[in-house]
Length: 82
Image (cartoon, rainbow, N blue to C red; front, side, top):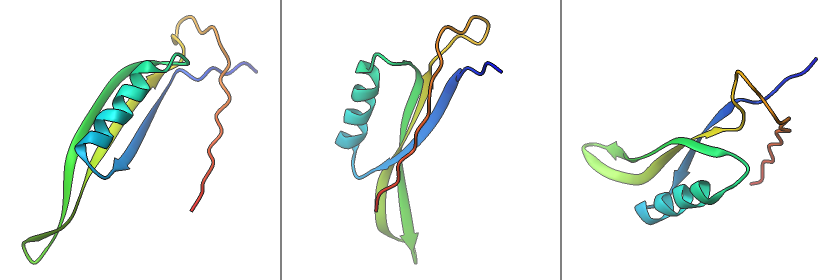
């Protein structure tokens, strides 16, 4: 059975706007995929009407193959560290 990864959507949390911009720039420079779409949104956690935490959510849509004419096999490996 042949299977081809067409695209992947990754959502990250970063501390600030500068980190969000750096993550997007890093993804744009990568040659293993095409960055098809990206966004960053400022998020806030409130308690009793007061902001107690804030961060940026960065979403990256990475395109690896054309669905109609795939040319490469992609192995996905996720590593978790705490």
